[in-house]
Length: 342
Image 1: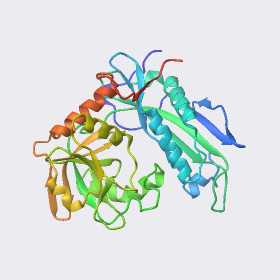
Image 2: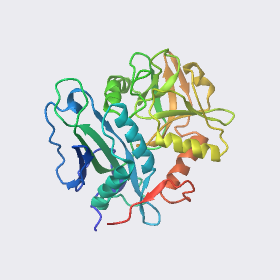
Image 3: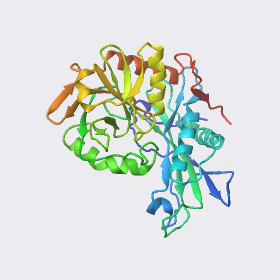
């Protein structure tokens, strides 16, 4: 199959049409066998629960071409398990893990010509989503669900690439509340943060950093990603909170940090501690790691980078994880799943 004719090294992080998507429907107590579909549009009833009552969740993961020419996906089993958790929390029928992985394989293979070449810095972004599609007027769970997987080739999440960004601590908007749905990947969490993100960008910041909704004392996460810091004595610390999404990238970085001797720890991080740390970063599927150059809290600007470059340990962690994803280092943890052609 001839590769798509794209300017791979200059792709943005945005949607680009590919050949087809994969769709499965839950109806009458079971998932069907799924279909490949060229249509980019989804026919949804105007009374569907996903439109009125927020029964919707999604995932995000990536496929890469490795140095050896294989096509691999990173930690797809973790995404499958996280989607199950999201569905269950908002009373949707979850795609079984084996169906999730099968659907990802089908979607990647059906669009294999859009997998960016090794060495371009681009990847094939994979977006699975589940929607409640049965019409309801009363507030109750759907009885029918649609599971879709589409893909699109993307470049870096931020235009600056692996360069430090500036964050603003958000005190007046809550992304998620304790005992809510902040720990699962539902669209409402992102909608709740849009006004904070847009306002921060209008003031010249890249993103916001949320505080806990209850006490407004502790760091939760950034708008699109988990947050971590590196201490001056060599610890990798990331917030412990029931209101943040359990990032698969963060989980991977914790494993690598321990391997590197960084003594990883999950604990509450008070906003007043921010000046004490040597490095800071955001992490997630889209950007892997985004180094933090500064964080502004009220009238105080805490600077972590004075030369426009990422800190030592942030760089080491980023390049190590990328090397594993691209097959440049051994996959000692079994994180890569090879997608063989059909």
